[in-house]
Length: 333
Image 1 (cartoon, helix red, strand yellow):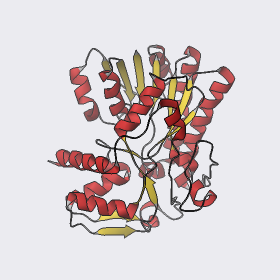
Image 2 (cartoon, helix red, strand yellow):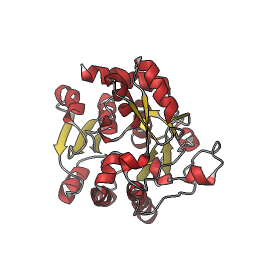
Image 3 (cartoon, one colour):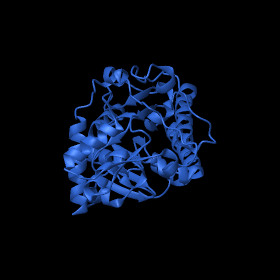
Image 4 (cartoon, one colour):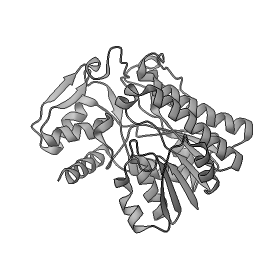
C-alpha cells in the first residue's frame, strides 16, 4: 500500500512512518520542516530508499498536494502548527496553514476517494471538564459538549482551528460519503518529542537533567494524562490500514485515562533523574501573557476506540518517563 503522511518529519509522523515501513508499505512524507526534522527520518532514508521518500513542501501548495494524494492509497494528515508557545506567537499561521492545508488535502482526497485520517486534538474540548462535571469526576467522550473561549484569547485559536478541520472532514463524509476519519490526540509523548514548543514532559526532563529549575505553571494542581507515541501510532495505523470495520465519518478520542497532576509529574521526574533541581512555580501570565486560560482537567473516555479496535494503552507513565529520559540523555551526550 502507498501511504502519504503530511507532517511526517515530526514527532508522531516519524514514528508512524516507521510503523508503516515495518509493515511492508511504501511511505511518502510531506513536511515543510518548520517544526519537524530530517533527523527523525535518517534511519528510514538510509535503510529504505526504495520504499520511503521525503518531499519538502507545504500542505498549502495545492498542486503538490493534489499530485501526492493521487499517487497514494491512504492519507494521514498530521501537519499542524505545534506547541502552545508557537500558537501564541503565530496565531495567523496557525489558522491559515491549518485550514488551507486541510482544505487542499480533503478536496483532493474526496475527489479521488482516498481514505484519510485527520489529526485533531483534545484541545477542542476546552474547559468542558472544569465546568460541566464535578472536578474529580467525569471523562471526555466524543459527544461531550465543548467549551471553548473567545478567539481574542490566543489560547483558543489552535482549538478553534482544529475544530473547523473536524467539521470539514465530517461534512465531506456526510454530504459526499468521503472515507474520512478524525482522531483527537490527548497528550501523546515519547522519544523524539522536542521541548522547544512547550511540551510538558520533554521540558521537565530537560530541566531536570541540566540542573535547571523544573518549570510548573500556575499551581501545578492541573491534571493531565499521557499516552505513549507507540500506542497512539498502533491505533491510527489500525484505523486507516487495517480497520475491523470502516470508521468513516467517526471521531475517536485517543489517549490514556490515567491522570496525574503536573506538580506530581515534576516530582516523579526529579526522582527518576536523581535531580537536585528545584521546582519553580511560574504564573501563566509570565510565560503566556495576560488573560491566558488553562483547563484543570482533560481526561479521555476511550471506550469508543476500545470497542472499535480492541485497542488500549500498553505502556504506563513510568514507561514513558524512562524512555523520554533515556532519549534526552542520549541526545545530550
